[in-house]
Image (cartoon, rainbow, N blue to C red; front, top):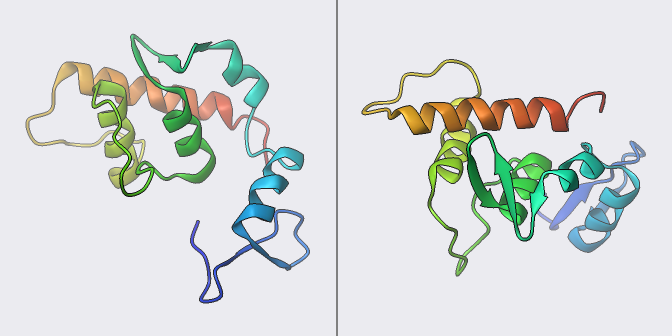
Length: 125
């Protein structure tokens, strides 16, 4: 999701209203884009189990909600197979992709992230 020249985002209410980011974030509580209750059930502390691996919970949730992998300047994320998979999916999509020098754990992680995305967004608009 990108902001317009005034730094505003579309309201999730469908009203056509444009909101500052702080108000937009508050709207996510009223109009969730996925099943946050279910997501909490697979949370382990500040990490989340995705397939056979773990990744930072906040990173995975941010990706599911916004599609953004990068948390911004100055943020460092643990680079594991799940984070690599999220980056690859963000760039090339969830289908069968041909990644140069692909690795089995990356492929398995992409499949796990794809299943997670499908389950999280199930029955949500």
